[in-house]
Amino acid sequence: MTLAEKQPDITPEFSYHLLRNALNGYHKNLSQLDPNEYTQVHHKASKSYALESLVIASPEADGLVISEQQLDDSLAAVAERYASRDEFLSDLESNGLDEEGLRKALYRELMFDSVMQRVAARSAEVNELDVHLFYEMHHERFQTPETRVASHVLITINPDYPENTREAALERMRQVSDKLAGRGNRFEEFAKRYSECPSAMEGGKLGEVSRGQLYERLDTILFKLEEGGISDIVESELGFHILYCEKIKSARSVPLSKAAPRIREVLQERQRRNCQKSWLQSLQKIENA
Image 1 (tube, rainbow, N blue to C red):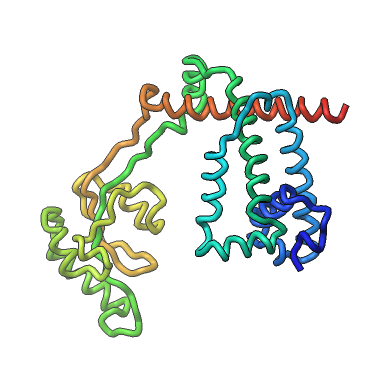
Image 2 (image 1 turned 120 degrees about the vertical axis):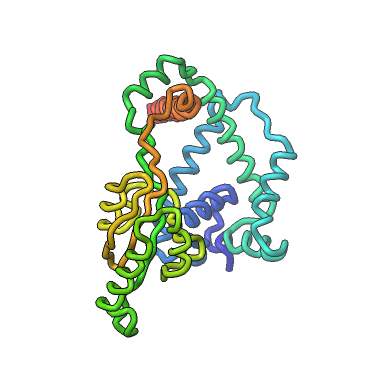
């Protein structure tokens, strides 16, 4: 027995809200919900359906047209999630829907979205002063932190292997350090030859590293090195390392000229959401008056 047969008073449009809330809240179809979950889903669906009904009945919906092509595209987008048309129709049926019912539900959804877009279009345009003030008040968002282009040689500690006991690993790393003798131009060669890290294949490269990405001890040592500097032997949870700071990229600020387009986008979207929220609140007040 389908959902529609169990609860004949539920319209396909409301079934769609039930299904959408079940998927969003529990990642389940309606038939998979337990009684408590269904109660919660029904409560949320009642609210979302009532809000949708209020919006599409508002004066702001006057003159809006949803084309057959829009509906066809929306319906096709849902159907494409299924392996076959039979699976699609079967899943609709198990959730109290059929293709025509889904089409009606999608029409309401598209109308709702169109009304909300029309309302959002009323929002005030963000001006240059708004952008400048946001930039000045949120400087920390436009800072690029210092980074280091780094490489390492690693010899691991593993007591299960005689050559990788702590004492043996440390002695091997001392030999590597002595041979390397602080020569950065040979670091890649040494990493390929001696390192036990997968990065050895690429000359020990760790890439561009910011603070906090490495083990704490490695992080501390790396960010004390000068450009071109090679560290003494450093121990971490993995074993023993020698670090090479190939390049230092200093902290810098993103200039307003580069940050402005993104700031404007963020502020405009905020204006749009606030405009929509305010309009919905006024609509609900009228409804409840």
